[in-house]
Each structure stands twice: as C-alpha cells, then as structure tokens.
Length: 137
Image (cartoon, rainbow, N blue to C red; front, side, top):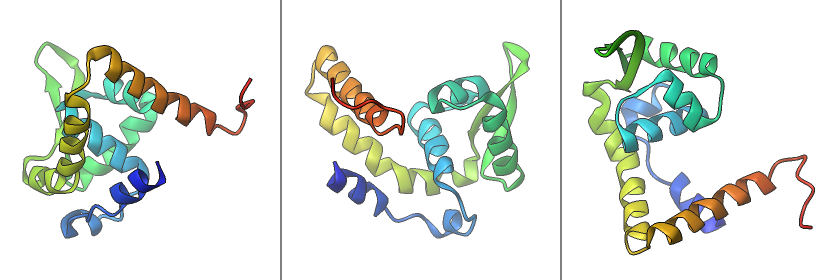
C-alpha cells in the first residue's frame, strides 16, 4: 500500500495546474470528474463524503480560476452540473489519466464480486485509519 500511494503521489502535475496551488482535496474532486464525467454538486459531495456546501465552495473557487465549468442541468434548472473546463481537460487527463487506466487494468480481470471485495477492503482500510477506530476485535 505505501508503494501504491507513493507512486500515485509521484505523478507529475502539469505546470498549468501546479500554478494554481491546489490542495489535496482538489485532487479528489478532479479525480471524480475525470473518472465519471460531469456531476452535480450533490453527487460530488456524496462521493467525496463531505457537505454540499464544502463542494460548492471548492467549485466556486475553481470556477473563478477557470479550472471548472458550471452549467444548468437541462432537466432541472435548479441543479448545476460541474465539469472540468474544456481548456483544462487535457492537463487534468495528462495528470490523472494514467491512474484511471491503471485501476481499469488492475480491476478488469476481476468479477463483480471480486471488485466489490477490493473496494470494500480499501474502505475498511480507510476506516481503520480513523482516530476513533477501536482496532481489531
């Protein structure tokens, strides 16, 4: 696991993104949009496991900087769809695309049940890192 995380951290960030002084939370937001395409603020909040207001603030900040684009949802004008700005798509793909392809390669030979087991193991690992986690039973 440390090798996996270390290798992912060494993925070179394109200069155009490095200049924006992004925080780690932005990586997760970009990854969701890169892997799954345009999403609503609510969908992003659910996937990132943070409050919708937190996502709204991040999206507003990155939209002002021209990294993200917000548009009305044609099906419901009250909702906003968030996507990577077209002129930034290549930079984000260059940064995160290798990671997405690596996951696709690693999981492609597994059955749905096996993929579920891998994802659950990673979630359990993440949960075990929580400060209030009691440890093994």
